[in-house]
Length: 50
Image (cartoon, rainbow, N blue to C red; front, side, top):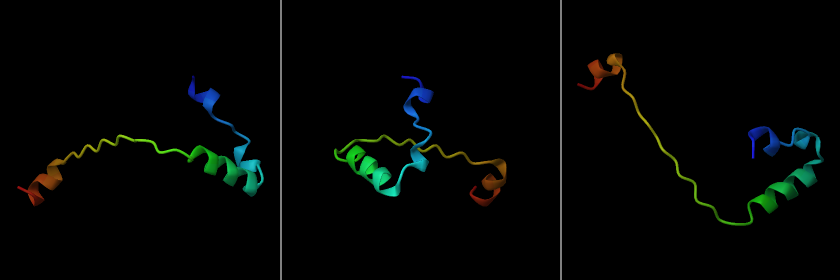
């Protein structure tokens, strides 16, 4: 599915109660999220941490 098809642009205009129900329903199950962190040191940091 293309990204544009997954976005419901009028969502922020829905009543708060309905938005809350949507969020609660979408979080009803556990999910695993992989996060990758990449750290790069610049030459200015190389002088601080030799």
